[in-house]
Image (cartoon, rainbow, N blue to C red; front, side, top):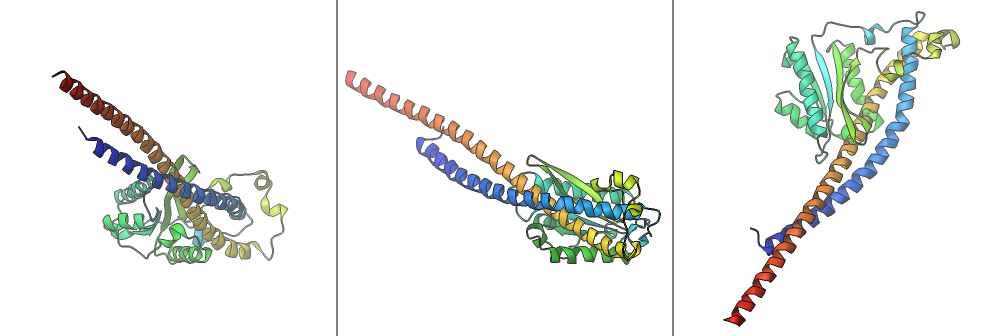
Length: 297
């Protein structure tokens, strides 16, 4: 049985840990609030842009963009996998890494080899997992997991788009955790290229689409020119929105993890305090019995 001094030391240690977890929860909650605002402001714009592009691509009078939407036999594939740069966020990183392994395994079972799979790891935890799995790292993109500078994201997205247009890869997929709510972060796997006009919520048909988008609006100078400018912008915007989404999911997971750690710490503190009081009472009782026995001797 632990001595009173040892129990008191554990109580002090738990109190110190509680201060840390409480502070980390407050910091994560503050960052989550900012991330929520960023993704909530970006999603309507991204969906509307995607919807406009989808309607242009699906309309019979609009020209096709074969370079972006062409379905090719998959011989080379690129995967953009997103995790965080730090830990203490529950199962956030483990879920993202496991989802990446499942994605890679599905391609290996389809007949591709490791040399046919290129992985762009965003976040230090994901980079470590990719290196451990035996895949080479194609650049350091850890900054994109925390700092969302549009110019840097645009450069990264441009690199992905160029590799697809040059037919260096036949498909590009995104693997990340989607922020559904503060208590739920869902692993997502979606195709980035080739571009599909029916992918995403923004591609759902609306009344404007049913009546014919191009019949209601005048497109200047012409649909082909609009598509040539709009399509790359939408693809860059998709990467930017995905990174904001994953960042919000990370902070939500860390907030919940620190809250659970704080609750567990309070419960442990109560148990230790009860044990301390019981042993202290027993010690006092033993001393009283020794005094009484000595006086009767």
